[in-house]
Image (cartoon, rainbow, N blue to C red; front, side, top):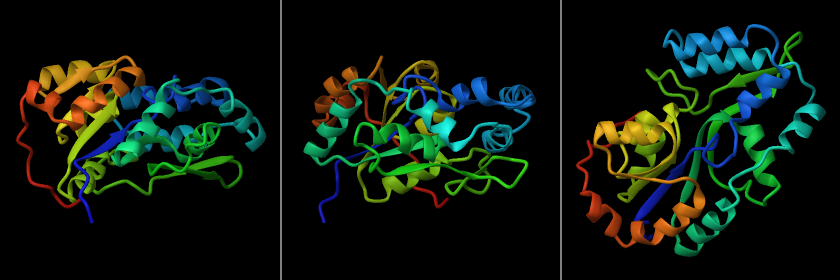
Length: 235
């Protein structure tokens, strides 16, 4: 079996999607208390898994209203073309998200992209009085995130290929420390710059589409310098 030269790991909320899905749901359907959980997470008192689990339990929304809301959310207009190009070039891509699998599948389904490999938190009906509950099938011991993106990086690296991360925020910081190269948006740009991580800033997938050939032919990595990564650890 041919080993892919690169594996792409891509964040969803704020990277593929135009806005953060869980934030939009909480703003519209969250019962009182979700803001306090958000403050505790931002202050570092709790991890994202504990924060998200508590916030999802506070969602007051029916399945029909949830679907209607999700059907009004959009993705980067160039993402479908980017996916098509990775398929054409034989470059595997996996979505790695600390968000909600149901929401991601629902949104991507409108574009015929819900078959992309996905690691995310699982949203399921809750036990009354809760309408919804969160589980985290991709968590790892010692990691406070719902989806351990570092474990996803380790898995992608096991076949010997290089790894690209496409992301935008704090949930991507740890994974960015472990990949060969980053396409960075928003807060992730400053993290990569401060940490000496090889990266290029992007505003969206039009940029990523233009940069992809230079990544695959090695010129981007040569320009920014090869990176010595630690040995793959077992998560």
